Image 1: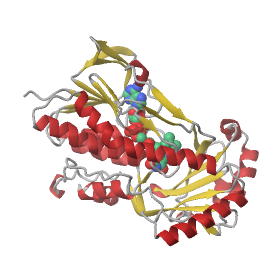
Image 2: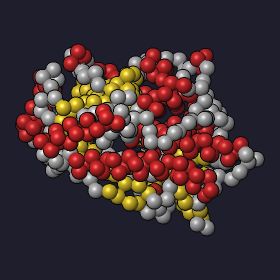
Image 3: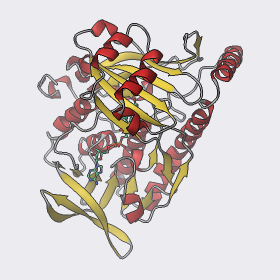
Image 4: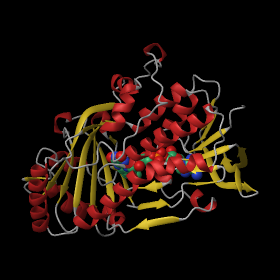
Length: 409
Ligand SMILES: Cc1cc2nc3c(=O)[nH]c(=O)nc-3n(C[C@H](O)[C@H](O)[C@H](O)COP(=O)(O)OP(=O)(O)OC[C@H]3O[C@@H](n4cnc5c(N)ncnc54)[C@H](O)[C@@H]3O)c2cc1C
Protein backbone atom coordinates (compact mmCIF):
# COMPACT_ATOMS: atom_id res chain seq x y z
CA UNK A 1 0.00 0.00 0.00
CA UNK A 2 1.30 3.46 -0.90
CA UNK A 3 2.00 5.37 2.36
CA UNK A 4 -0.35 8.30 2.94
CA UNK A 5 0.94 11.87 2.67
CA UNK A 6 0.77 13.13 6.25
CA UNK A 7 0.89 16.87 6.82
CA UNK A 8 1.50 18.18 10.35
CA UNK A 9 0.40 21.74 11.06
CA UNK A 10 2.75 23.29 13.65
CA UNK A 11 6.37 22.42 14.43
CA UNK A 12 6.04 22.74 18.22
CA UNK A 13 6.67 19.91 20.70
CA UNK A 14 3.60 17.88 19.65
CA UNK A 15 4.21 18.35 15.93
CA UNK A 16 7.93 17.54 16.02
CA UNK A 17 7.77 14.58 18.41
CA UNK A 18 5.01 13.08 16.27
CA UNK A 19 6.98 13.81 13.09
CA UNK A 20 10.02 12.04 14.57
CA UNK A 21 8.03 8.90 15.39
CA UNK A 22 6.35 8.75 11.97
CA UNK A 23 9.40 9.63 9.88
CA UNK A 24 11.75 7.27 11.72
CA UNK A 25 9.24 4.49 11.07
CA UNK A 26 9.21 5.12 7.33
CA UNK A 27 6.14 7.35 6.95
CA UNK A 28 6.46 10.47 4.77
CA UNK A 29 5.70 13.64 6.69
CA UNK A 30 5.60 17.31 5.82
CA UNK A 31 5.54 19.84 8.67
CA UNK A 32 4.24 23.39 8.18
CA UNK A 33 5.54 25.91 10.74
CA UNK A 34 4.74 29.61 10.68
CA UNK A 35 7.94 30.77 12.40
CA UNK A 36 11.22 31.08 10.46
CA UNK A 37 13.00 28.84 13.04
CA UNK A 38 12.42 27.17 16.41
CA UNK A 39 13.30 30.28 18.44
CA UNK A 40 9.69 31.14 19.14
CA UNK A 41 8.17 32.79 22.21
CA UNK A 42 9.84 31.45 25.34
CA UNK A 43 7.91 28.97 27.43
CA UNK A 44 8.01 27.27 30.78
CA UNK A 45 10.09 24.19 30.10
CA UNK A 46 9.32 21.60 32.74
CA UNK A 47 8.98 18.11 31.31
CA UNK A 48 7.41 15.57 33.63
CA UNK A 49 9.11 12.33 34.60
CA UNK A 50 7.11 10.00 32.37
CA UNK A 51 8.05 11.92 29.23
CA UNK A 52 11.67 12.35 30.30
CA UNK A 53 11.87 8.59 30.74
CA UNK A 54 10.57 8.03 27.20
CA UNK A 55 13.09 10.51 25.77
CA UNK A 56 15.80 8.82 27.81
CA UNK A 57 14.95 5.40 26.44
CA UNK A 58 15.10 6.75 22.91
CA UNK A 59 18.56 8.21 23.61
CA UNK A 60 17.34 11.75 22.95
CA UNK A 61 17.61 13.01 26.48
CA UNK A 62 21.31 12.26 26.82
CA UNK A 63 22.02 14.24 23.64
CA UNK A 64 20.09 17.18 25.10
CA UNK A 65 22.13 16.94 28.30
CA UNK A 66 25.42 16.77 26.38
CA UNK A 67 24.45 19.90 24.47
CA UNK A 68 23.56 21.81 27.62
CA UNK A 69 19.92 21.92 26.54
CA UNK A 70 18.41 20.11 29.52
CA UNK A 71 18.62 20.24 33.30
CA UNK A 72 17.83 16.83 34.81
CA UNK A 73 16.30 16.08 38.20
CA UNK A 74 14.16 19.13 38.67
CA UNK A 75 11.56 18.77 41.36
CA UNK A 76 8.35 20.80 41.45
CA UNK A 77 7.70 22.12 44.94
CA UNK A 78 4.64 23.96 46.13
CA UNK A 79 4.40 26.26 49.10
CA UNK A 80 1.67 28.23 50.81
CA UNK A 81 2.42 31.37 52.70
CA UNK A 82 4.96 34.14 52.92
CA UNK A 83 7.27 32.28 55.24
CA UNK A 84 7.23 29.21 53.07
CA UNK A 85 6.72 26.98 56.05
CA UNK A 86 3.89 24.88 54.68
CA UNK A 87 5.13 22.67 51.93
CA UNK A 88 2.26 21.23 49.95
CA UNK A 89 2.42 17.42 49.96
CA UNK A 90 3.86 15.79 46.80
CA UNK A 91 4.41 15.34 43.96
CA UNK A 92 7.86 13.95 44.63
CA UNK A 93 8.57 12.88 41.08
CA UNK A 94 11.40 14.71 39.42
CA UNK A 95 11.17 15.99 35.89
CA UNK A 96 13.56 17.99 33.75
CA UNK A 97 13.83 21.44 32.30
CA UNK A 98 14.37 21.15 28.56
CA UNK A 99 15.04 23.99 26.17
CA UNK A 100 12.15 23.87 23.73
CA UNK A 101 14.08 25.35 20.77
CA UNK A 102 16.93 22.92 21.52
CA UNK A 103 14.69 19.87 21.62
CA UNK A 104 12.82 20.88 18.46
CA UNK A 105 16.09 21.49 16.61
CA UNK A 106 17.41 18.05 17.62
CA UNK A 107 14.25 16.34 16.38
CA UNK A 108 14.47 18.29 13.12
CA UNK A 109 18.08 17.19 12.64
CA UNK A 110 17.17 13.55 13.21
CA UNK A 111 14.13 13.71 10.93
CA UNK A 112 16.19 15.44 8.24
CA UNK A 113 18.24 12.26 7.82
CA UNK A 114 15.22 10.73 6.11
CA UNK A 115 14.43 11.72 2.51
CA UNK A 116 10.70 11.43 3.15
CA UNK A 117 10.72 14.30 5.70
CA UNK A 118 10.11 17.94 4.85
CA UNK A 119 9.68 20.95 7.10
CA UNK A 120 8.52 24.27 5.67
CA UNK A 121 9.43 27.12 8.00
CA UNK A 122 7.78 30.50 7.55
CA UNK A 123 4.58 28.85 6.32
CA UNK A 124 1.37 29.92 8.01
CA UNK A 125 -1.67 27.73 7.64
CA UNK A 126 -4.66 29.95 7.03
CA UNK A 127 -7.54 27.57 6.64
CA UNK A 128 -8.61 24.01 5.94
CA UNK A 129 -9.81 23.22 2.42
CA UNK A 130 -12.65 20.71 2.34
CA UNK A 131 -14.05 18.70 -0.54
CA UNK A 132 -17.12 16.49 -0.09
CA UNK A 133 -16.97 16.98 3.69
CA UNK A 134 -13.31 15.90 3.97
CA UNK A 135 -10.23 18.04 4.65
CA UNK A 136 -8.06 17.60 1.56
CA UNK A 137 -5.64 20.53 1.81
CA UNK A 138 -4.48 23.48 3.87
CA UNK A 139 -4.50 27.01 2.54
CA UNK A 140 -1.13 28.56 3.38
CA UNK A 141 0.78 31.84 3.18
CA UNK A 142 4.52 32.03 2.73
CA UNK A 143 6.50 35.20 1.99
CA UNK A 144 3.18 36.96 1.41
CA UNK A 145 2.14 34.47 -1.26
CA UNK A 146 -0.89 32.27 -0.75
CA UNK A 147 -0.69 28.60 -1.63
CA UNK A 148 -2.15 25.22 -0.89
CA UNK A 149 -0.66 22.04 0.56
CA UNK A 150 -2.50 18.82 -0.28
CA UNK A 151 -2.33 15.64 1.77
CA UNK A 152 -4.11 12.45 2.77
CA UNK A 153 -4.15 13.18 6.51
CA UNK A 154 -3.65 16.48 8.38
CA UNK A 155 -2.57 16.40 11.98
CA UNK A 156 -3.16 19.76 13.61
CA UNK A 157 -0.62 20.55 16.33
CA UNK A 158 -0.68 24.33 16.10
CA UNK A 159 -1.26 25.02 19.77
CA UNK A 160 -3.71 27.02 21.84
CA UNK A 161 -6.44 29.07 20.16
CA UNK A 162 -6.18 27.00 17.00
CA UNK A 163 -8.42 28.70 14.46
CA UNK A 164 -8.52 25.39 12.58
CA UNK A 165 -10.87 23.95 15.18
CA UNK A 166 -13.68 26.05 13.83
CA UNK A 167 -12.75 25.72 10.19
CA UNK A 168 -12.77 21.92 10.60
CA UNK A 169 -16.20 22.15 12.25
CA UNK A 170 -15.06 21.11 15.75
CA UNK A 171 -16.86 22.37 18.79
CA UNK A 172 -14.87 23.72 21.78
CA UNK A 173 -15.87 23.49 25.44
CA UNK A 174 -14.20 25.96 27.83
CA UNK A 175 -13.76 25.96 31.59
CA UNK A 176 -13.69 28.90 33.93
CA UNK A 177 -10.29 30.42 34.67
CA UNK A 178 -9.57 33.14 37.16
CA UNK A 179 -6.27 34.89 36.41
CA UNK A 180 -3.64 35.23 33.70
CA UNK A 181 0.12 34.97 34.18
CA UNK A 182 2.92 37.41 33.44
CA UNK A 183 6.01 35.46 32.41
CA UNK A 184 9.39 37.10 32.78
CA UNK A 185 12.80 35.79 31.78
CA UNK A 186 16.11 36.91 33.26
CA UNK A 187 19.68 36.11 32.31
CA UNK A 188 21.44 35.19 35.57
CA UNK A 189 24.71 34.06 34.00
CA UNK A 190 26.46 36.67 36.19
CA UNK A 191 24.95 35.09 39.33
CA UNK A 192 24.25 31.41 38.55
CA UNK A 193 24.39 30.52 42.25
CA UNK A 194 21.17 32.48 42.77
CA UNK A 195 19.17 30.20 40.45
CA UNK A 196 16.75 27.91 42.29
CA UNK A 197 17.41 24.19 42.10
CA UNK A 198 13.76 23.28 41.81
CA UNK A 199 10.65 24.67 40.19
CA UNK A 200 8.86 26.48 42.97
CA UNK A 201 5.23 27.46 43.14
CA UNK A 202 4.38 29.91 45.92
CA UNK A 203 0.73 30.62 46.70
CA UNK A 204 -0.02 33.74 48.70
CA UNK A 205 -3.82 33.57 48.86
CA UNK A 206 -6.55 35.52 47.03
CA UNK A 207 -5.25 34.39 43.65
CA UNK A 208 -1.65 35.56 43.95
CA UNK A 209 0.74 32.87 42.72
CA UNK A 210 4.43 33.23 41.88
CA UNK A 211 6.35 30.51 40.06
CA UNK A 212 10.06 30.44 39.33
CA UNK A 213 12.29 27.86 37.76
CA UNK A 214 15.84 27.53 36.51
CA UNK A 215 16.29 27.26 32.77
CA UNK A 216 19.18 26.34 30.50
CA UNK A 217 21.93 28.93 29.86
CA UNK A 218 21.53 30.23 33.42
CA UNK A 219 18.17 31.74 32.74
CA UNK A 220 15.47 32.28 35.32
CA UNK A 221 11.82 31.92 34.28
CA UNK A 222 9.39 33.64 36.58
CA UNK A 223 5.60 33.77 36.40
CA UNK A 224 3.49 36.24 38.37
CA UNK A 225 -0.23 35.52 38.44
CA UNK A 226 -3.10 37.37 40.05
CA UNK A 227 -6.55 38.46 38.93
CA UNK A 228 -6.48 41.76 37.04
CA UNK A 229 -4.90 43.38 33.99
CA UNK A 230 -1.34 42.03 33.82
CA UNK A 231 -0.54 43.80 30.55
CA UNK A 232 -1.10 47.09 32.37
CA UNK A 233 0.89 45.92 35.35
CA UNK A 234 3.85 45.03 33.11
CA UNK A 235 3.93 48.58 31.78
CA UNK A 236 3.84 50.05 35.28
CA UNK A 237 7.30 48.95 36.44
CA UNK A 238 7.26 50.61 39.89
CA UNK A 239 3.96 48.88 40.69
CA UNK A 240 5.19 45.55 39.33
CA UNK A 241 8.31 45.80 41.50
CA UNK A 242 6.22 46.73 44.52
CA UNK A 243 4.05 43.65 44.11
CA UNK A 244 6.56 41.11 42.83
CA UNK A 245 9.75 41.65 44.80
CA UNK A 246 8.37 40.91 48.29
CA UNK A 247 7.16 37.53 47.08
CA UNK A 248 10.68 36.38 46.13
CA UNK A 249 13.22 34.66 48.36
CA UNK A 250 16.13 36.80 49.52
CA UNK A 251 18.57 34.87 47.34
CA UNK A 252 16.71 35.86 44.21
CA UNK A 253 15.25 39.25 45.04
CA UNK A 254 18.30 41.53 44.51
CA UNK A 255 19.00 40.00 41.11
CA UNK A 256 15.44 40.40 39.88
CA UNK A 257 15.35 43.92 41.33
CA UNK A 258 18.52 44.81 39.43
CA UNK A 259 17.43 43.28 36.14
CA UNK A 260 13.72 44.02 35.97
CA UNK A 261 13.38 46.90 33.50
CA UNK A 262 11.73 47.75 30.22
CA UNK A 263 14.13 45.40 28.36
CA UNK A 264 13.16 42.30 30.36
CA UNK A 265 11.78 39.48 28.18
CA UNK A 266 8.14 39.13 29.04
CA UNK A 267 4.80 37.86 27.85
CA UNK A 268 1.33 37.70 29.30
CA UNK A 269 -0.09 34.21 29.09
CA UNK A 270 -3.85 34.22 28.82
CA UNK A 271 -4.79 31.25 30.92
CA UNK A 272 -7.17 28.97 29.11
CA UNK A 273 -8.56 25.56 29.94
CA UNK A 274 -10.53 24.18 27.02
CA UNK A 275 -10.86 21.20 24.71
CA UNK A 276 -12.53 20.19 21.49
CA UNK A 277 -15.31 17.69 22.07
CA UNK A 278 -14.26 15.58 19.11
CA UNK A 279 -10.56 15.55 18.21
CA UNK A 280 -11.13 14.71 14.59
CA UNK A 281 -13.11 15.26 11.42
CA UNK A 282 -12.74 13.44 8.09
CA UNK A 283 -9.11 13.81 7.02
CA UNK A 284 -7.93 15.66 10.13
CA UNK A 285 -6.85 14.90 13.72
CA UNK A 286 -6.04 17.41 16.49
CA UNK A 287 -3.39 16.82 19.17
CA UNK A 288 -1.67 18.74 21.99
CA UNK A 289 -2.78 22.24 22.92
CA UNK A 290 -4.78 22.45 19.68
CA UNK A 291 -7.03 19.69 21.03
CA UNK A 292 -6.95 20.66 24.72
CA UNK A 293 -5.38 23.77 26.13
CA UNK A 294 -4.21 23.55 29.73
CA UNK A 295 -3.45 26.09 32.40
CA UNK A 296 0.14 26.22 33.73
CA UNK A 297 -1.09 24.55 36.94
CA UNK A 298 0.88 21.37 37.51
CA UNK A 299 3.17 21.92 34.49
CA UNK A 300 1.15 19.50 32.37
CA UNK A 301 0.98 21.18 28.94
CA UNK A 302 4.09 19.61 27.42
CA UNK A 303 3.48 16.36 29.23
CA UNK A 304 0.03 15.85 27.77
CA UNK A 305 1.00 17.12 24.31
CA UNK A 306 3.87 14.62 24.04
CA UNK A 307 1.86 11.76 25.51
CA UNK A 308 -0.84 12.48 22.90
CA UNK A 309 1.76 11.94 20.19
CA UNK A 310 2.97 8.64 21.69
CA UNK A 311 -0.58 7.28 21.65
CA UNK A 312 -1.32 8.73 18.21
CA UNK A 313 1.85 7.21 16.73
CA UNK A 314 0.99 3.83 18.25
CA UNK A 315 -2.44 3.78 16.62
CA UNK A 316 -1.47 5.39 13.31
CA UNK A 317 1.55 3.15 12.76
CA UNK A 318 -0.29 0.00 13.90
CA UNK A 319 -2.99 0.79 11.32
CA UNK A 320 -0.48 1.48 8.55
CA UNK A 321 1.44 -1.70 9.27
CA UNK A 322 -1.80 -3.69 9.16
CA UNK A 323 -2.70 -1.86 5.90
CA UNK A 324 -5.81 -0.41 7.54
CA UNK A 325 -7.04 3.07 6.58
CA UNK A 326 -6.31 6.08 8.81
CA UNK A 327 -9.95 6.83 9.40
CA UNK A 328 -12.43 7.83 12.10
CA UNK A 329 -12.12 4.46 13.83
CA UNK A 330 -8.38 5.00 14.38
CA UNK A 331 -8.85 8.64 15.49
CA UNK A 332 -11.62 7.54 17.85
CA UNK A 333 -9.28 5.06 19.53
CA UNK A 334 -6.62 7.77 19.96
CA UNK A 335 -9.09 10.16 21.58
CA UNK A 336 -10.61 7.43 23.76
CA UNK A 337 -7.18 6.54 25.12
CA UNK A 338 -6.22 10.14 25.84
CA UNK A 339 -9.51 11.62 27.02
CA UNK A 340 -9.47 10.27 30.62
CA UNK A 341 -6.09 11.91 31.30
CA UNK A 342 -7.12 15.21 29.73
CA UNK A 343 -10.42 15.23 31.65
CA UNK A 344 -8.72 14.49 34.95
CA UNK A 345 -5.93 17.04 34.52
CA UNK A 346 -8.32 19.78 33.37
CA UNK A 347 -10.70 19.08 36.26
CA UNK A 348 -7.74 19.33 38.66
CA UNK A 349 -6.59 22.58 37.08
CA UNK A 350 -10.06 24.08 37.32
CA UNK A 351 -10.21 23.13 41.02
CA UNK A 352 -6.70 24.52 41.60
CA UNK A 353 -7.72 27.82 39.96
CA UNK A 354 -10.59 28.13 42.46
CA UNK A 355 -8.47 26.98 45.38
CA UNK A 356 -5.76 29.64 45.00
CA UNK A 357 -8.46 32.31 45.33
CA UNK A 358 -8.96 31.37 48.99
CA UNK A 359 -7.35 33.51 51.68
CA UNK A 360 -3.92 32.42 52.89
CA UNK A 361 -5.24 31.09 56.22
CA UNK A 362 -7.63 28.77 54.41
CA UNK A 363 -4.82 27.58 52.11
CA UNK A 364 -2.65 26.77 55.11
CA UNK A 365 -5.43 24.79 56.70
CA UNK A 366 -6.27 22.94 53.49
CA UNK A 367 -2.67 21.90 52.87
CA UNK A 368 -2.12 20.85 56.46
CA UNK A 369 -5.21 18.63 56.36
CA UNK A 370 -4.40 17.36 52.87
CA UNK A 371 -0.85 16.54 53.95
CA UNK A 372 -2.06 14.55 56.93
CA UNK A 373 -4.62 12.63 54.86
CA UNK A 374 -2.10 11.80 52.18
CA UNK A 375 0.47 10.70 54.71
CA UNK A 376 -2.07 8.41 56.35
CA UNK A 377 -3.09 6.99 53.00
CA UNK A 378 0.57 6.69 51.94
CA UNK A 379 -0.28 8.59 48.76
CA UNK A 380 1.61 11.01 46.60
CA UNK A 381 -0.09 13.84 44.83
CA UNK A 382 -0.89 12.57 41.42
CA UNK A 383 0.22 14.28 38.26
CA UNK A 384 3.80 13.95 37.14
CA UNK A 385 3.64 10.30 36.13
CA UNK A 386 0.47 10.73 34.10
CA UNK A 387 -3.03 9.47 34.77
CA UNK A 388 -3.05 6.56 32.34
CA UNK A 389 -0.29 4.21 31.22
CA UNK A 390 1.26 5.38 27.95
CA UNK A 391 3.90 3.33 26.20
CA UNK A 392 5.60 4.96 23.21
CA UNK A 393 6.11 1.89 21.06
CA UNK A 394 7.39 3.77 18.02
CA UNK A 395 9.72 6.31 19.62
CA UNK A 396 12.72 4.83 17.84
CA UNK A 397 15.88 4.53 19.89
CA UNK A 398 18.65 5.82 17.68
CA UNK A 399 22.17 4.43 17.78
CA UNK A 400 24.78 6.76 19.26
CA UNK A 401 26.53 6.76 15.89
CA UNK A 402 23.36 8.33 14.45
CA UNK A 403 23.55 11.27 16.85
CA UNK A 404 23.94 14.49 14.98
CA UNK A 405 27.22 16.33 15.42
CA UNK A 406 27.15 18.55 18.47
CA UNK A 407 26.29 21.94 17.17
CA UNK A 408 26.80 23.50 20.58
CA UNK A 409 23.09 24.29 21.05
C1 LIG B 1 4.49 31.22 28.71
C2 LIG B 1 4.20 29.75 28.75
C3 LIG B 1 4.74 28.94 29.76
C4 LIG B 1 4.49 27.56 29.81
N1 LIG B 1 5.08 26.76 30.74
C5 LIG B 1 4.94 25.41 30.72
C6 LIG B 1 5.67 24.51 31.58
O1 LIG B 1 6.50 24.91 32.39
N2 LIG B 1 5.45 23.16 31.48
C7 LIG B 1 4.56 22.67 30.60
O2 LIG B 1 4.37 21.44 30.53
N3 LIG B 1 3.86 23.48 29.75
C8 LIG B 1 4.06 24.82 29.78
N4 LIG B 1 3.37 25.64 28.91
C9 LIG B 1 2.48 25.01 27.96
C10 LIG B 1 3.29 24.33 26.87
O3 LIG B 1 4.23 25.23 26.32
C11 LIG B 1 2.33 23.83 25.81
O4 LIG B 1 1.35 23.01 26.42
C12 LIG B 1 3.05 23.01 24.76
O5 LIG B 1 4.03 23.81 24.13
C13 LIG B 1 2.05 22.49 23.76
O6 LIG B 1 2.72 21.97 22.65
P1 LIG B 1 2.03 22.00 21.22
O7 LIG B 1 3.04 21.47 20.28
O8 LIG B 1 0.69 21.36 21.31
O9 LIG B 1 1.73 23.53 20.92
P2 LIG B 1 2.75 24.75 20.79
O10 LIG B 1 3.93 24.57 21.65
O11 LIG B 1 1.95 25.99 20.96
O12 LIG B 1 3.26 24.64 19.29
C14 LIG B 1 2.44 25.02 18.20
C15 LIG B 1 3.30 25.31 17.00
O13 LIG B 1 2.44 25.59 15.90
C16 LIG B 1 2.87 26.76 15.25
N5 LIG B 1 1.70 27.39 14.63
C17 LIG B 1 0.70 28.04 15.26
N6 LIG B 1 -0.22 28.45 14.37
C18 LIG B 1 0.22 28.07 13.16
C19 LIG B 1 -0.28 28.22 11.84
N7 LIG B 1 -1.45 28.84 11.60
N8 LIG B 1 0.44 27.73 10.81
C20 LIG B 1 1.62 27.07 11.03
N9 LIG B 1 2.15 26.92 12.27
C21 LIG B 1 1.46 27.39 13.32
C22 LIG B 1 3.49 27.60 16.34
O14 LIG B 1 4.40 28.56 15.82
C23 LIG B 1 4.17 26.55 17.19
O15 LIG B 1 5.48 26.27 16.78
C24 LIG B 1 3.62 27.01 28.85
C25 LIG B 1 3.05 27.81 27.84
C26 LIG B 1 3.34 29.16 27.78
C27 LIG B 1 2.75 29.98 26.65
